[in-house]
Length: 425
Image 1 (cartoon, rainbow, N blue to C red):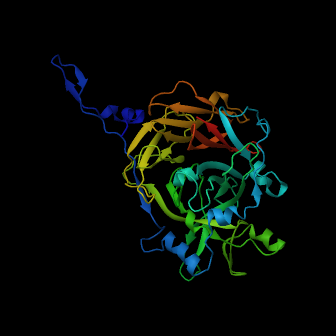
Image 2: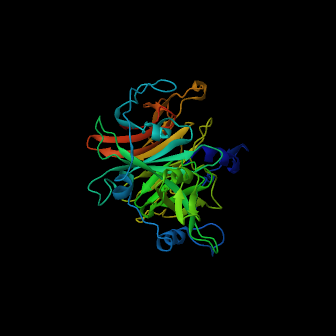
Image 3: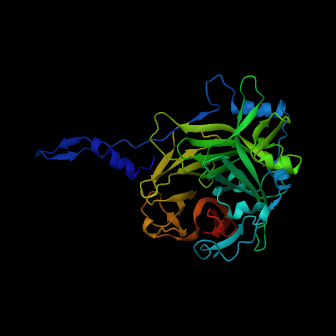
């Protein structure tokens, strides 16, 4: 495991002393223990005899007859939302030029019916991942379609709907492309004694996401990584009349009035399958973001990074994945210091690591400022200057190789300046 500055500081007092011939104390060659990080998998809440989330999902399918939807054939083929042109990048609060090495971008649907996506103050986009993360290319058996997923969290205190994921068709990324997309609500399947199979909203910030085969990993700052099954996306009702559609926006799960399932007006839900929570012996880690690394050879991995507003003592931690997309072992395989504060996204590309970060504390005002792209090479080394500029309010990152070098997907979170974009490395 890579030694971190935090480990050295914590371990300095534990280094044993030896005496020289002159009686002066010196540090012995014994090395302070490095902090270790661990994640343990759980497949249910409550007692070990309770219903697993997988079994509850199967009950929704086999007992309650909810149809399984395909992310491409169903969600995208019926998507009603269409992205808008990215504009001149100077709209909304604050002004900033395009990100450096700009390649492609789109804005969210700004039509009145869907304007919450582009300019609302309830849902905020956070994480991004693509079908390259999941499959190394287009979605299998989809006719070559490429897909991006973006996570959002509900910022509203009352009536919070948890987190959702946008499924976006990014097969074509020309200058005039306006991808179609739709939202899927993330839910926790349940089964209570004497009650039908059901589901509830999640309580996730969804600060980063990573798509690994059938699994969608979602970072939760304190509790670890929540994993959703993309192949068990379920279709629910939105109401058959204008009146029921409006009322259904307040319903989630089973509704006894008509024996149907609703999801706050969304057409689809994605159920939780399992959770990775910090092991009892693990050093403390804030699971602020998560990304996939497919660039280290045959063994793929997840990289989790921390967000601290003022401290540069955050770390990034790597877990190896097995062929089925599960974390291969509880114990992390490596960790290294980030060296900068306010990291919003981290991706590894070979022996290089790229970070998106907000500007320095003294530069922050009431208006959002343009973020920075940092390159750390080798890992753990101190960085003296950003590699380039990103959008206003930058969030997560996702890597994608291209014919003439790689690229990074990123996104901006603030109302009226929300965009998904791609830059060249």
